[in-house]
Image 1 (tube, rainbow, N blue to C red):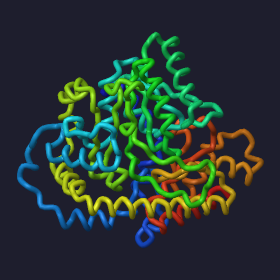
Image 2: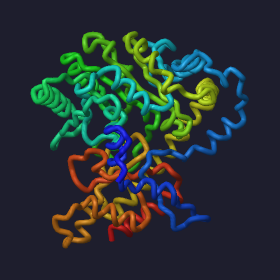
Image 3: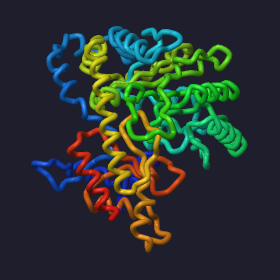
Image 4: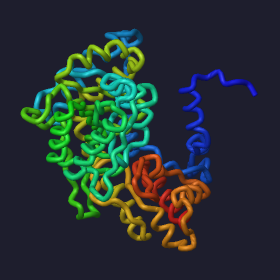
Length: 430
């Protein structure tokens, strides 16, 4: 056998990806006309509900100036782009201190933004807190190249988005420091939460900020779903919490503003994963911008992305109408999915009013239908049944779920695909 010519870290990535069904799914995608027996992919967080409207706008507007074929103003984004993002987010996030273009660094997606701040805030071996369940790709985004371990926080029976949950973050800080002798340098939030689809209450954000101040920990609030909120027409308990940005909280007497950083991007709120545009907002820490200036070349958004995003965000009439219509469609998709799950006896997490998904307990329903299943790995068993029915979901294992049998279904790829997905899921369980 030929000896591996890869680095140990590269080989670890190869090993970790072995057997991942995602690549089979992506190469055999369902199409009602051309490939009705292909995989239904409701595991990847994409929103196609407004693609027609967005494409109509962009295709009418696109006329690329020559400067966007050059390096233009460098790796952190053009002045025009930063101005348009600052104005747009000031309108929607309601920050206490208005966002200025100098507060921003743009990247080719929010994943590079996450990697950048992990690299900037923590040395190898120093920890970054992440509450369970979590968006699965946070793990490689934070750790893969920075060498900073994720400190996964268990909440036991407490609500991860509750005041009591904040105490669990503090326990994790102390345990990590005692066990490793290293510091925890950052706390990563997904707000609104992925996969729970809920927003952190204001009082919880404030308590988290006080905790970060106490231990001099950077707070990173990933607000990529900030505008993908909607009316929950199905559940009345717990009452959905409205979204409030971390930037909308006055830090005075709570936290050093140099410890507060917010991430946002085009992928989710505009259903445009392929545009590849993310932004790091750090209003009171110039050292962050100075440090990341030197790495910006590795994550520079393309000139076309810079131009398209500027065109879009500068048009307040279109974006306001787009966001309202998108939120209406999100509400409809969530309502249809949760009603279907109720009809078929499938438990799901209630109180959701944000993002693209429903967190559901397929393991519990499978055991009810198959009491003979015994002590086998219920999540793996259900996943195999799903793949046999050619439907792909994200498993709770990938999200660090503390409880077995939970899965995330993405509900934002159109009614026809969603209805087929739900039918296949029920058939797989039966």
